[in-house]
Image 1: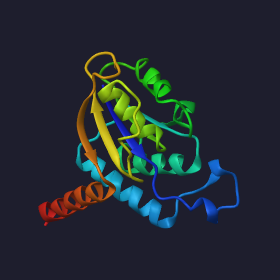
Image 2: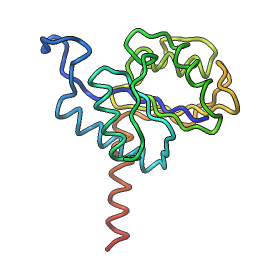
Image 3: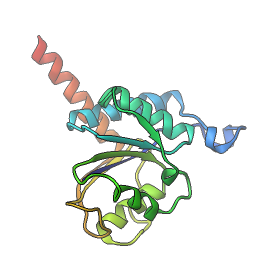
Image 4: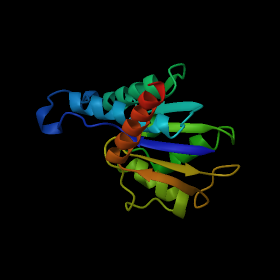
Length: 177
């Protein structure tokens, strides 16, 4: 199984938002950069079988942008395992219910996503693996997902994903010329 963990894009700052926390949206810059990061994931030949997201608006909207670029036919599924404050073990438990050949993209929040990565790689949920907004990590597991037995395939900062996406776009344009 491949688990691709993506942090939501840049959202309106909490001090600038008067509504409920779960309704805090992406900024225009956040939407643009999340789409560019999705183009980077597409260039990495990311072909998900599942697309899970936190029900919080900023994560859900990021997931919709990813779907539009990577796999428009894939259903975006909100999961309580990805809400702010959910224990990393809950998400790993969800992974264990999926087929071993699944490619799962999860869009959520920090510190949970970084803790999930550390749980998969080290066997413990540690605070040492934070993802930046619109950044992503890919962890591979053979067979059943077990804590401490994952392998890090890549860890990409948002700028790296955007650069990969731009290069792929330029390459396609050159090939068409």
